[in-house]
Image (cartoon, rainbow, N blue to C red; front, side, top):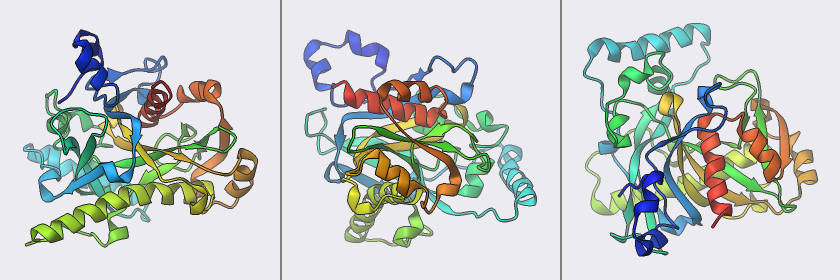
Length: 325
């Protein structure tokens, strides 16, 4: 069930009220600066404004959600060429395994209810394929003409990133400014985040001959890593201790229009105030990825969102939908 933002006004009142807690958009959403900077345009693939705890987010992990090679052999071979070019410039690049976003479904119910759950469909991909498809200068040629995003992006690596909207005890939101040494969007504002990592739970490839109980345990482990991964990113990038953070709430998936890169977003509260967090940030493990930490209120966050990559601009839109319900 996919509902475009434009079609909501045409729905019967009863059905419309049931959709308040679950919005799935399939139309590109552009902010006011997208014309000058296309990198800020985004698409909301899934919005859960009420925020979902781990108990209401499951995962279906399997080979069926892996990338499908493109039938054009020349285009497909460009993946290796792009990667080899990157390696020549930066021999330290590491081809790490990532979870691939393959869509989602409603679980435990065929209708949208207040207690709905989401099942994320995840496969495996790697950084090399991400560089060779999503970041390929010919990336648009990998896309299939379809209104279904999973079909449209079936030839893309589409590693699922993660991002956290972190609210401090003095009700401010944490934003980082990316350093000029990073590969994508140097100098832009972003929320803390990165990727959940298959290797954190011992996954390097798909298992064969897994029985139903083994598959269920694997799905549970991947689902847990979705939430553990975002806590780990916040701790490493901001420097706050894990025990200062509440359990993350899943609020949706955004997609950068350029390169169709997907990112899952979570809302997290921190029991420290912004002054203390600034002190901890100076010692953050991954602080080299950013140059500055900001703790801002909504008005300033609105301004910063104009200079965010599309996937993070979409994360801001997901956060705003939380504050409006």
